[in-house]
Image 1 (cartoon, rainbow, N blue to C red):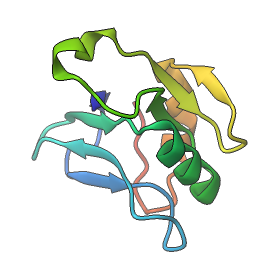
Image 2 (cartoon, one colour):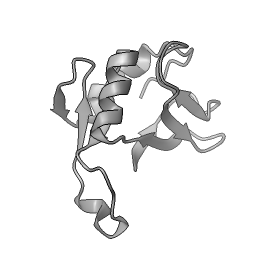
Image 3 (cartoon, one colour):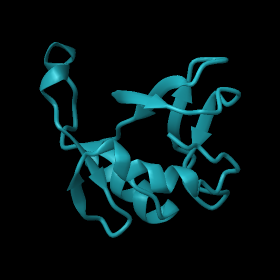
Length: 108
């Protein structure tokens, strides 16, 4: 599952969470040569693991299995590094994107 993502630096196709000591999880994927892409949304347990390991905010949904026919009915939240859920607001990701430790500064 994913949500729309945008960047002002269209030369990057994939952004990973964190640095070398984090789980290898994809944060966003961008269509080649564009600034438009998809930010991945993770199940709660995976989101909590990524958030705490990488000290980053991770979009998550409280759904373990997804039914494509009900995809528009799912709620996206943000899992914070302290394992606290917050309501999803795109601007809440801006700060963490600007501080990506994998060498990509993604201002929205």
